[in-house]
Image (tube, rainbow over all chains, first blue to last red):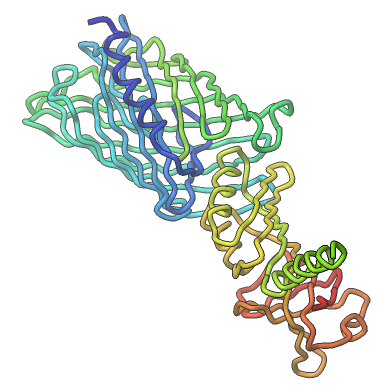
Length: 283
Length: 170
């Protein structure tokens, strides 16, 4: 079955999902791969459908459906549901998008905006805590049995009509499964965004902005049958541009990250790039 | 006969306007809102406010950090309710300009308070004019246009700096 034949029904269902509802709400700020401080108003709902790819010697493809709900204006609940389309035999360990989990893991998360201040009109500085848990949808990854994981992160940032910036970090720990354990992930992210004056139109005109995103991940050793698998640990840094466009109820974003630096010895931890395309809808 | 009929229609029309004005509380609101940076922010706020019963129209400006609302004649919304909705959307309400109807009463000597149909009351702060010079009869319903402070405390009475007061006749 061709990739398109696999993708089309999922996109169709996703599209119907998006079109079938009629209410409205506020969504996130735009970075695709890095930590940010998304907020929804109390009782509001948004949805993302994204196509993601990581390339080693060949491309792995995945679709993720993400639901976001504002419990209060400072507390948000998220569900991220993966649908792997094409897997590679040895996918690298890492968080593909820091707000949505890694390969084949179903993720539920809570965001708590514990600090906010408004320096002026159209501006805010805020800090958010993220706590999440994952459940694998596949039994093995790189030959390692996959267990559930927990993840915690914190991010602070600034949003305005012109400039955006966030700095954050987190840690994900995988539980063991049958004597196997995937390596833990410690990560730092940074993003800078800019809305050019030509796109600083007032609502409801189209709203575009560009980001430069950077992720550094330190990955711990895998364990196989309670034995450490040497050479699976390492560090990688990726950087690249992303673009976000907003109009009415819809958002379209996408971007690509390229490796800037990597010290992994194992070939199966190398990445040529990470790619993502996201459609968002605010209910 | 035509003259009588047109007069009667005009009287009913005008009666309807002033009757509805005497029932209204907030007529218009221009609320400064901090924290809105993008289109979904504006849309979420506009949708939340427009779904409130009694709201006639809503306009949100990101570049001016402004929420503008007009209300229908039968609304019983309060400024605090609107500002709470702004906070529920994740933003911060700051100063507001509003046009509001009510009755003025005198308290504690020289303090004038605008009482409205809801529980919300406004302490009127004159702006170079004495209230008693503006209001001929404290038993008459008035339309007050004014501004609130940027930082409001959670007091039961909201300070309102007067810009104009008009008597409602009828």
